[in-house]
Length: 320
Image 1: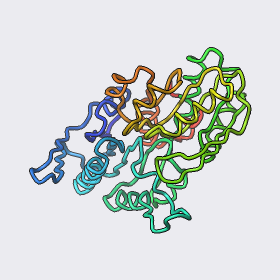
Image 2: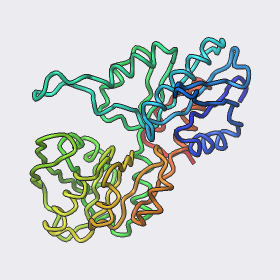
Image 3: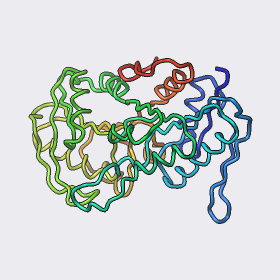
Image 4: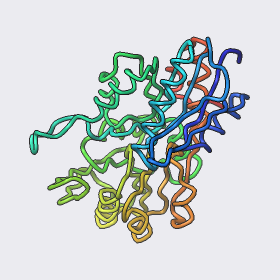
């Protein structure tokens, strides 16, 4: 693939390496360091003049440092005369701050701010996965490809849950109903949803199950889990409502704060996440966590974008 360069930020080098291996490319040389006053410094170690540049940086770990590093890397490539710079952001940072609620209307819309920052730094195109709200694509004036983990999730369900034909797909909140109905339709099974009421962020108050899960395998599906309060409450609710087993499948496993101990104490058969965020450390402390590799989806999106092909094939297929 001529005229293409892939650079990795420091947030998820393992995923970047998998993407490069899949495309048969070497990762570009880049040195990221911090000055003693904690300012980020990035040096691109090879020419990018006239190249199609892809920078892989996920919104995880030290989120603010990694976001700043991405902005600086984009800008460094842009002013070094790259022909096009694409930011590949598997997990989009600040995606949950996407609107003002009725309560506390002085909240910021930080997802829009991040979109502006990416555009101003010089990004020409964004590739991301399972945005918390699809409308975030509209915060940008540049093209955004929002890829879906759904095809990889369907494949995992069929290969790893023997009784999948008698399962029920459950959304732990009303916001994820669309995602769940899509998966339920593709598997030709029923779906249920849990209505939750929050008094404040990261704390769930009350849950109501809508749908019948008696004597069935329940699969909770959501786009992300952070402190895991919601999915652990939901799992307890499903078991008490008669479900035989509970799995959780999440695109972005953030797992901050008490998440790991909550999962260990909850009644899950498995908690399945994709590797948009590095999971090696968390898997050591939690045997229930399993990982679906989505590097081939991102790699194929990069290949198709570079060659000017359609990316929509990836919305319903896993590349071989």
